[in-house]
Length: 310
Image (cartoon, rainbow, N blue to C red):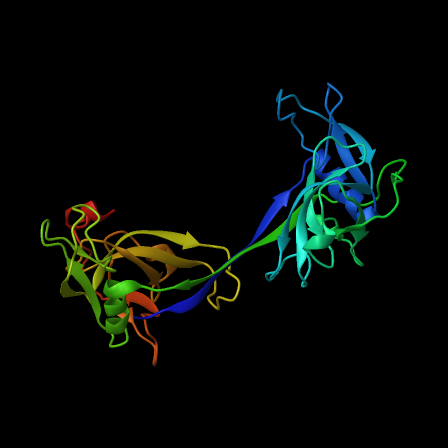
């Protein structure tokens, strides 16, 4: 049975409203802002709408750089991208002058050194850019004094947007049906499986018919040619993908298949690709799947022959 490590990763870019902008600008400049609701509660991290009344709130106030742990959990094995690379505690901290808690890491020598009610203070990152990671972590604070850093006046160069990387690492095992499909691709063949009840052929095979809910085992070789059922024009260049834009990505119903698969379409100007275009796979040496599909030169397929696969 095949298996392989896979990574799904993309940068999530978002603009900031006035409240979040002020909060992250404050972290960059070494102070913490909360937002005060009409009934006098101070929320940290700040939000733009009261979670109880849904009223818009803009009254920014300074809160402490010190606070109290309300609850915690020990993390004995930090993972990639977490705040610390040594064992630490996840803590909820109620900063002084705040009425809600902030989740972050606490640098402590061990779980015996952590308890609810302990006093902590912010440890700032060496370089700050306007992100929650500007707080490197919390650390124990032996003093009982509340420390508040305030900033008077407008901040220079406020933070107006952030880019947050999202990433998922996982191990994929394709199972019996897709293992056979992948093995056939290494021989430049495409195989699906036929449902014993409705007789539809699914490519890639799933091991079961999604319509009838019964197991599939009968292998059927399909293609290699097929029909473009629908497509899109890609105008934004993907990271680490050496393909010039614009290019076409489409759904292709291989001959003999009852499910369209997707692939890149090339060998034709992008503005001449159309529904019904007949295409065939192009393989590169040593590849385990087609590099792209190109026109076969046949007449376009009639719409009625593929309309059920849209």
